[in-house]
Length: 395
Image (cartoon, rainbow, N blue to C red; front, side, top):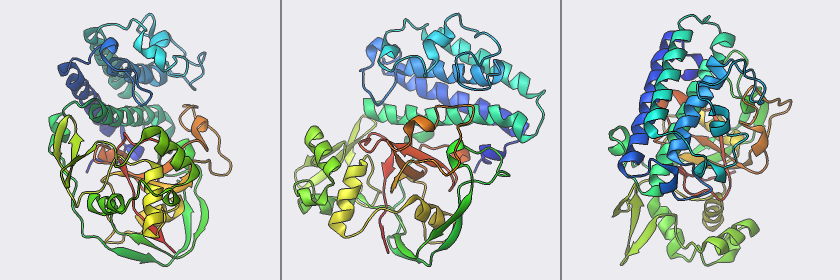
């Protein structure tokens, strides 16, 4: 496993930044091979960005925080101008409305790849002269995390648009773990990250005592076979299983199964990156919204874990606990820890508090250096395009 980006040394950061950029470009080439390298060729959907825009944004973000030495995401915070004449007008996600990203008149794919290479070369050169303390390396670690997160976004955009995976992910299969339950005795944990943890996201600040009562948690995620039982028992037809928000979502979507499931006689098939395949019964169910996960839990007489329960379990080292195949819904709204203040990337967390739901863990598309029991991810409750599943628990 790659070392965590949070404590990466300059040499490790240099290798990881090069690796991340290679991966970004490989994913972009998948879109280009499918004829989706120009925004005009990409459907306008609220859940994705045009790949060409996202490619430029990733490099622009690195330029902003490292080469231009911006101390925040405020428009006036950069100390230098962009290598691109209209870089800020094109790629600042804080000022460019989402829908406008399809009509900006962006440079060609070749020109933006050149920009990516130039930004990376200058970044690596600057890194050779950087101090090795946490403060000096903070922008490099931030930029690496940002590109890795966009790499995962590229992966689920491939799924949404039905484009084949690159070789790095194409052979990845979900393990079929033996299912069971684990009883945790509870206790007081340190929820969040400590100041000496190296790089820390602002929404993890700071570690604080949190009492967790005893609880029982599934050792694995809910499987396709288990979720199919819920469907067969009329799970999508019985409103008593659904919250009010879930019923409203269900009426808008008209779903009767998880996203990309298709009935084939008495069997289920699913679409994975443009290929229709038999649904693997023992794999974790994926592409389910929070509402679907909640409804399943009500049907099963269970519930989703809290963030604190999830972090307690993931940090326990219990040998039977399996995580990392998919992100996992929790029952906790995404909210700040007491004393929260935004870091330099001001829009990373604060705009999404209380409208998004906390998810924990990692997915098969999450780079290994990003994985941590402390990592707090977050999605809108209706999102079912991302690589997310769930496990259940009870007191």
